[in-house]
Every structure is written in C-alpha cells, then in structure tokens.
Image (cartoon, rainbow, N blue to C red; front, side):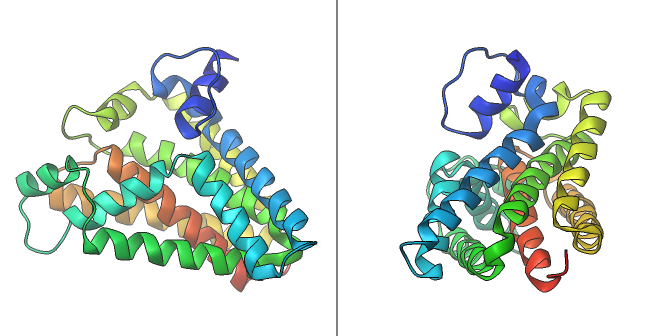
Length: 239
C-alpha cells in the first residue's frame, strides 16, 4: 500500500501516509489516473442532471485540474515556452526552471483545456469509461516515456527516470492498455497506436532539441496523451 500512496500523493493533492521516491509508485500510476477519471466521469453525469452538458463537462474538467493541482498543465506550459524554435539546449533548460508562464505556454494550456472540455461534453453517456481510460493511460504513458528517455538536469525528472524498474514499467504499460479497452477494441487499438506515437515522437523531439527530458517534459506528455486519447474516443464512438 505504501507504493500506492506514493503514487496518490504525487499525482494528486490528496495527502496519504507513506512516501519515498516517486518511482516506487510508478506501478500504480495508471490505477490512480483511472480513479481520478472515474470520479470526474461521475461528476459529469451528476452535474448533467442539473446543468446543461457544457457546464457539466466544465465542472468535470475543473475537478481533473483541481485534484491534480494543475501539475501537468504547468509542465505543458513550461515546455511550450521553452522549446521555441532556435533556442539552444542551455536556454531551454534555463526557461524550464522559470516558474513564469509565457504566451506560448498560455496558448498551449488553453488549447488543451478547450479540447478536453469539448471532448468531455461530446462523450456524454460514454464519459465514465472514456475518462477512466484517458486519465489512466496518460499516467502510464508518463512512466513508459520516462523509462525510455534520458534525463537532463538534477530535478524531479532525473529522479523519476533513474529510479524506474523494468518490471514496474511493464506492469504500468499493461494496466494502461487494459484500461483503454473499457471503451471497446477499436477505440482502444487506435488510442494505443496514438499513445505509442506520442512517446516515440516526444522522446525524439526532446532528445534532439535539449539532449533529454525534465519533469516538465513528462508532465507535458501526460497532457498531450490525455487530450489525444479523449479525441480518439470522440472520433471512434463504437464500443
């Protein structure tokens, strides 16, 4: 249970007993993500009984942001601010350490929020399995992406990358894939392919531009994965 609580504390604002290196909880990242998605889906359904679908979807999205402390949105913003064309690896790392948000980061966050909001509204009756799958797989993608990437700097990203064990990564990947099948084989296969592409493309891009990844890169990939997965479920409605 200590490893589960480690994952819960890292991925959410919930305080739980236990602790230790974040990598110890990596095996439970998809399950914690799925639990977050299940609650958000329940909020979407419950709120839909009193509010229009757009407002109900916004409340569910608000929960996703609030319960995670906007951790991954922050990483996405930092990455888009840092990785502008023409910047050297040294300049990229300097900007990643800056807590201020720039125009590129703000636009990236707004775009992913709007896409997730509209996807949550469009999914309607399939929202619970869709959110459980999308939130679960995106946290699993974090684990796989960190494992196959080279860390740079001395922050949390390096601690996570170097602390991961292959058996934990494999189990996290299996859990992530299984969660996608809550929405049926066709959407699951498409989402699996999309997430594999996200991991490969992000790893190649970050390694080429900066020589490796930081914790912000991991958070950005989580946001991209979740958004992309929800969009796949919207485009492939058959269960």
